[in-house]
Image (cartoon, rainbow, N blue to C red):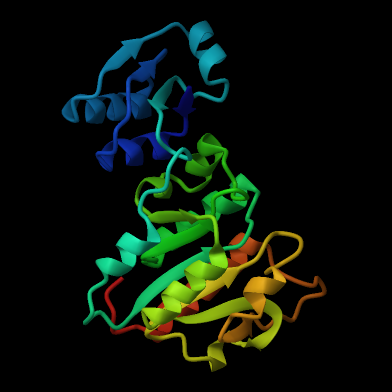
Length: 244
């Protein structure tokens, strides 16, 4: 069984109308009471439990926990369906490809930025991606319930499918061209590599261009979740006419 324990992650999951429940409640502070009211409005079952029992089910709880079953077991949408339903007249579409991001804290933080900057789809490889649902949901502040995600066994093939649909693929690397000098408008897919090794060679060689974030620091690179926020912001800034 899987439980969400963060107030934001529980609230956003309930608001999203994705299947969930019951909501387990051991103690009801002011914030918990707000969430209970929301759950009642959404007709989600609420079960009273003892604190000791909840400790055993969800050790990091704050008085409440929401039972979920689906996150991490299947993708939200397939890439094929996403491309098939893409509006032909929509000029600016932003997609993020995550190449072996295994730290759930980084994955969750990236999803939070994706929600803020209007990313249409996050694509990851299903065998290697971070899979700790409670940490991802809590770190993303509930954004996991809103950001569309697709899993694929073959990221190279996914990149080729995106190119056929008119996307330009930009890989992120510290030695790439300064991102503010690269046109990131239009149908854009950004590729972020793993925390240690970066983008795998197979994907790197298939990118249309490699871009980087100019740095004046002494360290060799930014944390991948911080880099994601900077890259996504610049892409959206260049598409300022698009409402995000």
